[in-house]
Length: 336
Image (tube, rainbow, N blue to C red; front, side, top):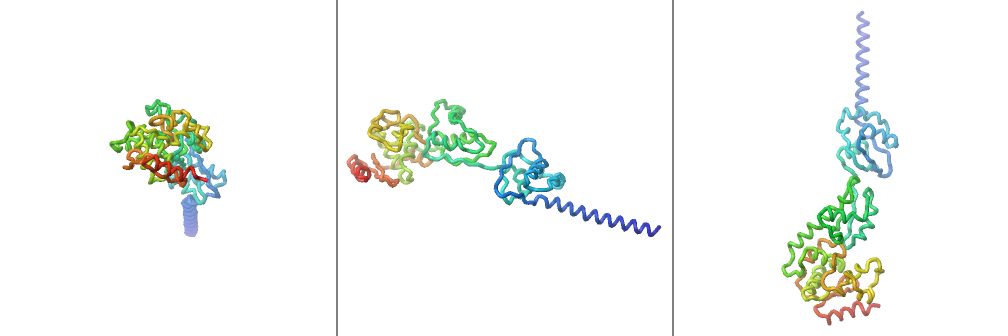
């Protein structure tokens, strides 16, 4: 009897030891499972839809041959319940990701971030080309006007009212939400520039400031010249002189512009031809930058009335027509 008890006790101890070893091995397997590397060579987008749970997710990853042993996740979440709290959205699996790092992204809602750059000096129509190719955003040409209406602007004139900047978005966002940020940023920046304007500025509304700033943006890309160009336009307005600026002519020509302006183009009566109209064109002609807005609000304290391109991105500024004609002869008429 004693011998039987000894054998039985030995068996129980052995079985217990084996179970402990197996249990520990299984525990280690579960603990190490999140460290399993996902097998992919290039980034892959992963969409988590409403109702998806972590068990189904990991099984889908196994079906795509990105990992193995998906059955382990059912037990893993008992040890690490935080892995079960996945969030809907669009995520990116990167080469080198493990199951754990992927689940950490999804648990925290670290979705893929996309970006779109709206370039200063471009028109709404030119922006259309960029916006129509964005991933995960639906585009239609009326989106700008819809935003105006939502913000109490029924003018139907969106040109210049959206701020050029790089905007980030996620797959669940709408284009309207992205452009609303652009609209709000422009209104705030314009208001700041208008509040800080010089007292002798020959403008009566913030919209006129926006219009002048758009012309400044098109006339020069050289930062040091912006406030000088602004001074020329402000000085001309004070004297009742026409602005006579080529970018307004080009804008008025629309799709007819082929890279050149002819004498007949300069003589043509359009609402935007500042060689033929007095004062400002009816709307901005492009999206001005913050720098152009503040240059328009605070022109340089100079008496210039003319400027002409030196064909290197810079300009010659003049006080008198005689000086201006000499500069034109040097840099424009005598070009080979």
